[in-house]
Length: 452
Image 1 (cartoon, rainbow, N blue to C red):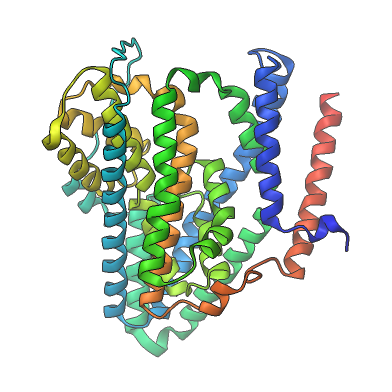
Image 2 (image 1 turned 30 degrees about the vertical axis):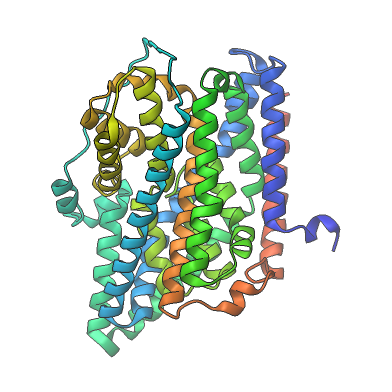
């Protein structure tokens, strides 16, 4: 077997990420991606767009069936309804705790550095805030009136509720449901195999996604908001590498270094797709096969975390609130900052499942503390890039909480966690990847011939 074939998927993905950033920046800085140019039409917003969109669509395609099969299997695996309640309570508490810590630290750092002070920004940019549903309506909407409609729309709270209820019902039926249990377990294995097949396209998709993003965004947008961007990225990194890793070490006793090494593949996917939901298949695979978390825990905490855990978004809200308040000369004071913290923690539940959740939550916070909502228009230009980093932090929080809960429930295989090779590709998986890669190369060759 050649060296290329021995290369792990993670290494391939990281190479694709690095090349994508370099190619995208080169196209942008050399002016090759000018609107209307051949490269802009056929490469950046043609080939790159198609490959990236197809991959993200394929991941999203797997989310609902994977969550349904995995959650039902997980509930059955727990075997005790009371244990399920404990897992849910622990997960909810830890997700809310990390969100509160994230925004408190973000506000503290941003306020102490005084970002936005003396800028006196004015902007004609307008952000139209969508109306977020009240918490009472969100709670009512958890119960689906039509499960097929919930699956079609990807309403994860409703899908999670139905799957858990179905799993509990199967448990209560007992031995009569043995064939149903076997069917769901087989279905879960089939879905994980589909993840393996689609992951073969990952290095190319990551390259295409990042090359297109950097070609269109470039570095120019960062210059005007350098202070905001620097503080936000710094705080996100602090939360990821210090806060979350300390919580992991304190509550589980496991090595943060091993976690970060085994979870970097998930972080790259989250960075590339900017979607916690789209990353669910990859996150589930990493936590169960690489970190040794039992499926009965991961199948619940991962979809749950992708829905309500918003550490990265909370950090953005804290930094953005201080930045806009200083830029417009609006004093908030201690009471205002405490309101922001409380609002952000509650909003992470209240706006779950709503499209554009980060900006909706931010508009709610601005309205509550008396900041001009149109101020969001000032940071929209750099939000796309920062959203990629926020999502990577969000999924990392999902992984940390899942590991902690699994350890507390004695559902963590520590030998798997400590084994650096655990969960890496099998010979069968590598053969699947090689076959998919060969087919993709043939398709790309046909596309090039058609373009010529």
